[in-house]
Image (cartoon, helix red, strand yellow):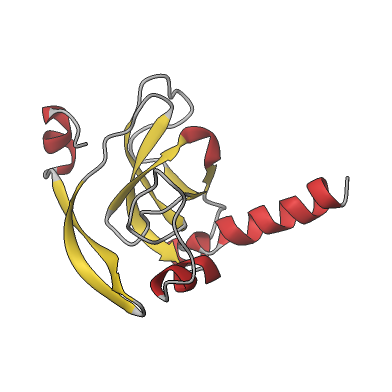
Length: 149
């Protein structure tokens, strides 16, 4: 659901345009409420989104988003902190970050658990950073979970 009135003051609106799957191989622009961060979450003003194989499969109706996630595709984003939920102390409004989310990246705003966010490396553009989360998580999984390093 949409956040309290302070959200309207901080980002200037309560709804956003997003791209959702409207049929196999088709995306349509639709109106959605801007999500408000729950405790431990961050509201991200998206500046760039990566397009992963899972996103393409979702658009082609070969992948179903996890239960409870949004119908907006987009699993990896780069952006700025627009607001923080209760208990988030490591991030502040305006901080630059990237993260892997369960969906919602094909929009202007999304929420993500604060613990899944990473700072943007020095010298990286928004676009370069948006391509990091899926690749980094795959590398981490291979090295540390499968490779036992």
